[in-house]
Image (tube, rainbow, N blue to C red; front, side, top):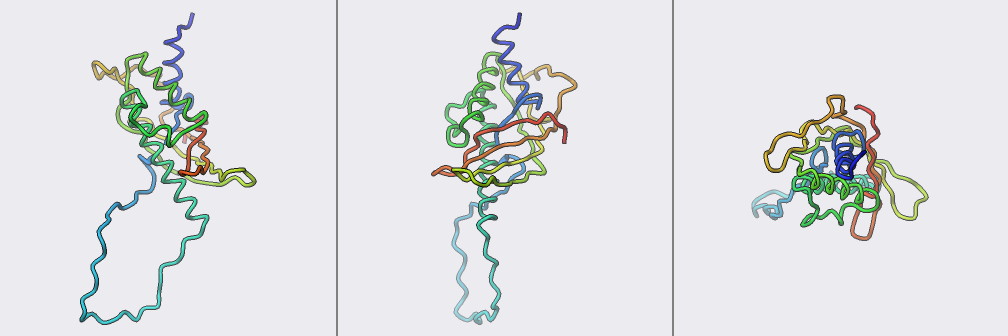
Length: 201
């Protein structure tokens, strides 16, 4: 008979190994855009500098491109938060409630519960590639769909006390296609669903 602990462990492994759903997030961590946090002001030209005669200017960013960049940044942050939570098998002290809701949030909390029950944490981080963003029309809120190739080969569950890697099925997918849905809420984009497609990439 399957115990509750076995069921929770199975949920966690499905998420981490793409045999089920692993949310979250990338990077953020991972394959997303990085924003320069340098807040220093640009140096002003000296008085002797000749005035520029160039008439060129940087092209303006379209609303669609701006939305895409926002979604990618939110997705990257989502995965950073997932990595932080899984590294300690606990979402407390993280921004999980800010980056995830709905089934994405519930799925993550279930996975974390399974890890705690098994005495495990997850080390390393997932890698991301081929990330693309599209938008759904005729939705009450702005809605984006993110497709991504997630690589969990270096994101591994280990025994918390010993650091020993947990035994995993050799046939597991370590690179799999993931589809996530995000909505634009008043405070930004929030991932509401994340699904591992069970398809290698």
